[in-house]
Length: 304
Image (tube, rainbow, N blue to C red):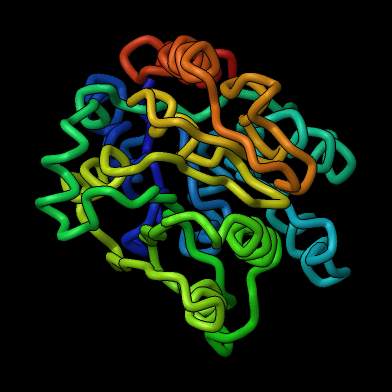
């Protein structure tokens, strides 16, 4: 069995997942699509980059990370059905996505969460990281490392990522000595809100992995404010480094964070306890790539 993994080449999370797959599963993988037995469309929206005849002649697995119901227009449903005729199996990272995809197809669907690599995501000294990044030593630093603004105008909030919820939460605790650390791209909405609130922030756009690890380690709290998610990866990364995190109830979060750290709309001023943080670490480590990759390999082996 040889697997070809198609990534979108967008310099974003799917490209990292693809690279880690090839790095850890090279013996059953190929970067030559013609040599593959199975084509893994990790970025399902890029499926039409592959010639239809190749899709017909190979087994095809499509990952659907998440679907925003309000954006599932008749046109997008039709596009899903067109692609569906080439698909042998779907992969989704959580049950919420499963529930939506199962209404759109009769093809098999496997629920397998994302992985994380604990050789890349490990704890570093908080004070040293703050110094290296030029961050205030004594402020309470809150992190958010995912895009929040639609690409069409770079003004409209990407509501499925909950940037409005994030800023509303921050505004409630703005009397504290807080500093916001932003990562990722398209952060224009949150930056605009923070400036209106006169809250200090630091923004590192598309930081490399080493800097991103230091960004996590500099934090007092990481916030996931999304309304819809596949993972997100940040719940694994933060939890795997024992960084305190709170979240809305999305994606893989219920499998990782303690229930006390999950809120309907981040309405409470809450800080995870030591036992909460340890619980999240113990759950996240179950998804470490060298162990968790076996669940993906089984999925591919089971395709008929």
